[in-house]
Length: 124
Image (cartoon, rainbow, N blue to C red; front, top):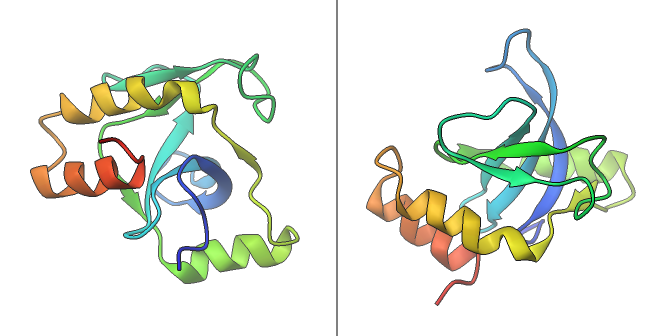
């Protein structure tokens, strides 16, 4: 059973940003552990996340949909253990169509990963 549901948000230590540090990520496919990063600047494949719809945000942001990041259960469980077993927040479900449009149109995401994301976001 996955530790998080689709659209749950947690903080992780992200070594792939400059400088490395904590970053919010959104679970997009719980079973394989796929996440997208929340960021301030708009990247080529991104979905707008408005603070008004997502009160856990400090300001309007973007969900980077360039390709899934993978985190194993240890990273997720460590976050949950430090935060009472709860995610930091949850992205508004109304952005799911925009996320799927970005994913399905991306040449950077494999057909196999697209299918896992489709299933994770419960898109029929």
